[in-house]
Picture 1 (cartoon, rainbow, N blue to C red):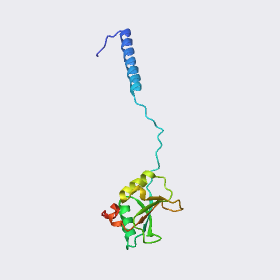
Picture 2: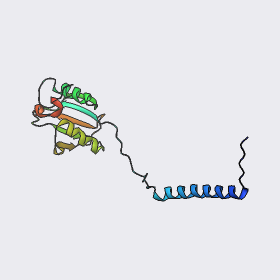
Picture 3: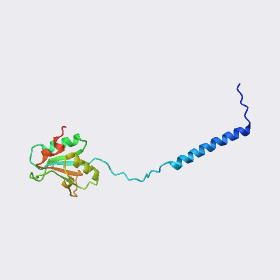
Picture 4: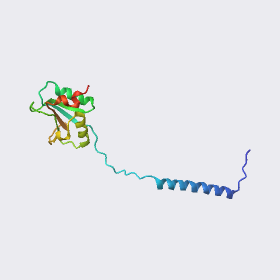
Length: 146
């Protein structure tokens, strides 16, 4: 058999050196470790519920835009005709949604400006109502391929 001839005092010194090394490394790691603030509030990122309405009088325009929005992974909860067909430009009506980042992204995907978003608090299954105007051919969402 293999037998080491180590004195107990030498063994104790090696053990103390090892324990001290572990403690020093652990302390140094904690000292130089960056602190992360875990109190960051995460906003509700659920998808916007969109109602699409035809405000220009072109047949099936609401269906085409609704299909394109669905293709872009938006949640379309309704489509139909607007209160009239004389909307010159497409508008987005915020029905009380607080997801401002989602609305900004929707504006980009549709191809409208933030100035074309109006606030109207109304009881609805939808978060926003998109009314397609006579400018529908210039919209990014209209020209995409579903």
